Image 1: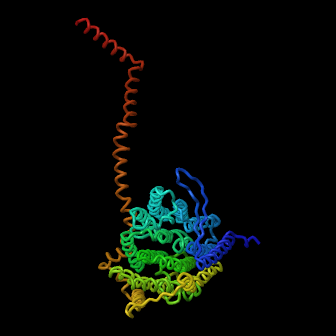
Image 2 (image 1 turned 180 degrees about the horizontal axis):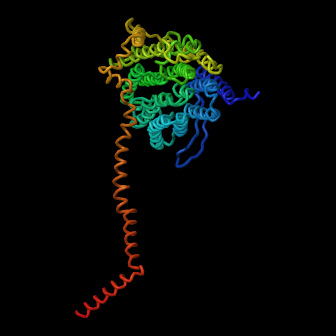
Length: 577
């Protein structure tokens, strides 16, 4: 009977029932327009109170419910995926700490408790990224941790600035800060923190690097935790952001969306393609938030979490079955060997592309329609719609290589939809990836809104999606794909495929000159002049003096005769004077 009480099952039941509880209460709160504050005063000093505050409204309850739901299925999935790991109990406990840090961030309207959750996410994510201990994981973990530390410093500066107002509960000051220089300072720091945590340009390099973590962790990180923390914080702070900050963030997030979509079409690593699609969707959330629609950004945040977690779990099952190979060129015909996994994978891919009546359709189509109705200039319009076409393009390319193309791996193989726990986790998310979009749409937008657009703009999303799918199919089936690596396309393919050189700028670009200068400093100062006039120089002079002094004190007849002659000479000179 011990199998019934494994840590994965216990944690799964706990998180699942908690998720049901929070979603149920979120439905009650949104229908009654209720908000609950729970405050515990820890310390009061010089009129500044340190309060532990919990904010329970429909947004925090729904998001917390979705995070716990995805976490429960990921933990259940880990029963099979991490089953051979001797330290699976430690792994599950670290994942629980990760979820707890995200939950603390979600329900906190106080900057101190937000910092606890924010720093908890950074610390635990480092522990999870380096879980498989090798040089690549250590480098990826260090890049992740140091990139997120920039945002942590920004949050600390916000805390330091808000002490002027007597409280760290930002939610009380959102209206008072409006159109003031305080809002510009605090809003700019919060945007910097959100950009680092959500990997917007120029801090995008750490997101694909974090794929060194186990696949269940990637499913959590890229769907509802860590990378979404920055978007969620900016949604909460959205009334405080002025026009200059939002315009700057709109440009950067739009470029991030375009850069990630373009780079995914050059990538051949299955996990990194899905990671770049996460980066693209984060740019979409940030962009629509900057246009003044935080509700739409939150809606897409919720729907994206469902199908992106499913996409990662399916990718993990595929990698697990094909002998830990992640190159999509070595896959193919998986729809024959793994039909159930392939069905879940393609459903999640279609939801990502915005296939009608799947989860992604309700949020992406609404976002594109609001962009068409808004006052976005031609560059912003181009970035939104071209990025949508690129999403369909790399999704079609990924599906063709892995599902429908020719088998490219070993001739001796055994593939099947094995693993009941894996399949159960995927099927649970499959259900939500199909119905989650319409359910959240009915709950969040209970009042119907009329969107009136010309036929050309109404069909624009369909046209760019079909065009992107056709280009992805052509790239996968023709010889153009191999020509991209030829000499004339080499520079452009390296530029696009390397995320516009952001990994080089974040690693070698930052560290190379500093390490060279510090090396020269060590050689010239610490191991050079400091040694010459410091420890080693004093040591050499003392040793020389000691040896010289010792030579005079040896019982040597020649030394005594030399001394005798020297004093005779001295006495003779004195008498002569």
